[in-house]
Image (cartoon, rainbow, N blue to C red):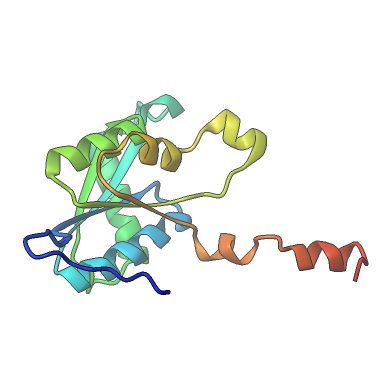
Length: 165
């Protein structure tokens, strides 16, 4: 038996009027923009591209103008001019600022890329994506960038390397 989605008369449909993609200005964060811009085209959404300057990592000397310039250069270098977006810079703790901005703007979906950190690096550095998911009242889509998806170790790889097959 196949379960199906049934829209109940008077029920609500999801419209993604405002979508927030986040960036730390790394190429990994472009995966979030890929998904966000696809949804944005589908729903004719307003697309925000948020960069949070982490105040805990010694970036306090970076001025707002420098942060906006860095984000503008990143957008110009990596994102097609066809993608209409609103660049936004905030200062503070990234997960907190992402959540705060999304709530203030009435965002319908947050899209954030993961870096794939595990083990000790994850424990020491934490995960902005994880904290955003855990504390956000708004739906969050986490995206694993293609290089990380392609590098996932599979059982077959282990068996082959250990000559178990």
